[in-house]
Image (cartoon, rainbow, N blue to C red):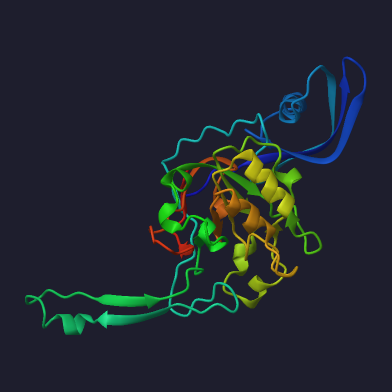
Length: 305
């Protein structure tokens, strides 16, 4: 299915207020519901997005409208598109030999009952295959429960389905907001939305390196102060398409894991395909089997759009 084209405006602006004062901006970008808007209409969207009051005038400079994925601007309605419901798979397939995280064992898949052997156990023409998979819980796209970090934390069997199934997704498309010298995703990047009860999904684009040596080095991550911001905001779940929710190259500290899991917020790592989701409006699900005494396990994460 061909996805609808989305548009954004690139511009600078000068805003003056009726009660005095003003503000300026350079290199600003704003989601558009349609590519046909004029400068006045885009100026109104800008005021709505910034939540400004008593605006006297808005002047846009160097306005360009480009085909570009929405980033979740406030007060901008998505274009009405007559399309069928889509289900987007956000998980990496698990196969024998898959390396998810360097240093962790790859899954092994071995037969318990082959189809050939089963023919002697069932009626003619009836056969089955039964296989055994041996793997660490941190394989493929997986979820962390509080028990992963804390001995007294809730395990996989204790995770409430209300925090795993049919969650409103707030997707932060961050592929153009971080660089090798600034890999941490801070709270300011996440502060423009109402996040209580949502699945916050961080789209960094790092999943394109999954399965390669480059995946293990220089990955973007969530900072500790941003994790505290999300916990205080009351989010239901946090997911990322990167190597880890924490910076694995800064020593043994894991502030994002520690803060989120202490607050009972499950973490989904190694997502993929988040670029196929809108900034808001999708419904996210990532439910593991209810394994008692276990902290992490693969999920078939997906979203309904």
